[in-house]
Image: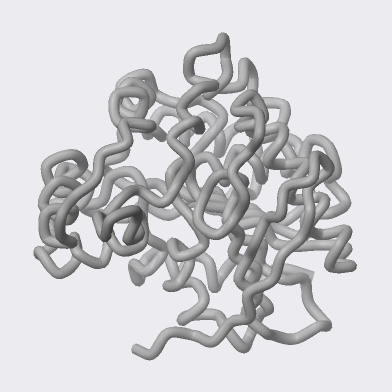
Length: 287
């Protein structure tokens, strides 16, 4: 499938960073989809959403500060979910957008919940991709071990094989071509022609501060999503979002839609048929 067309746009954060996003054109009579990536990810992660829903919906796929085409922060202490939420509000204000449907993968889902807590009027709906108010300790430990290492690779094949070694359990059915595609979403050609992760290694710094990577209590932020269509996706092999946490989420938020993505860990790519069917069903409820 051909890649959906987009315009590259930018906005400025309150502390003067130039941040960038992909703007896939769509109708102006419905809220855009604001796609917020995970910790080490970028706007490229949402190409499956653009291919599936582009044209039907306007789609804004962002590079958070320190990722992709966005500026790196001058102070690594600003690499926090609260700051990312403020950056998203600055984007909406600069683009003159009143309401969006938040689609957040992992960290992006935490940012979406924080938007609901602070400015609920800005959200017309939400998709939480393999994330909830409780983050499982084994998954968090795995992320701590790998983020910010600064590794680089001589070829895309070396990069793909390393990703398979690191996170192969999350995608047991991936062929080598899938791992190559995964690498090209996560990485870029860096200095000297080597393949490197496409983010500021200092995004790992907040992990060294109390609650820097895992805000203390996200349940109030999750409950703030009430009153709008909300979907929670879970990879059945996830080490970040447990089945027990998902069950509590259903109890805490009546009407929450859920979908399980089989033979997938953290995090679903949103290209899976089950994920896209669930997202389409949610979008049909957005007013």
